[in-house]
Image (cartoon, rainbow, N blue to C red):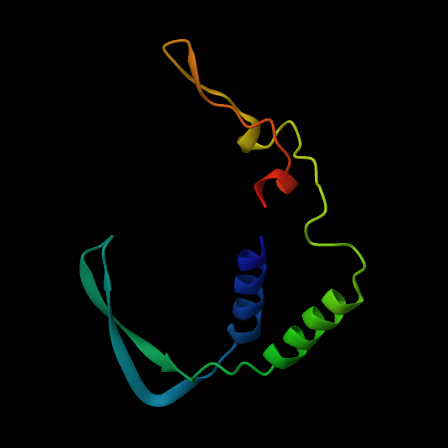
Length: 101
């Protein structure tokens, strides 16, 4: 989930980058099997990174709950599913996240 949120932040911060005047690059489309020319955009800047890191570290320092606290896995979590082949269960996961640490 965290990787998805970071990807969303990266996209939102860089979606409106301007193009570099007169510079283009080629890209190959596997779907249409042809080349196309696309404009080169300005390099990404990560000005938000410092604020994001300091906020994460601050929240972690102020958090009184241990990261190793036991958490129950919901019944709908795929880790609790039983894979049955030929009537024999291959995988059963009746444990909490604390058991895996």
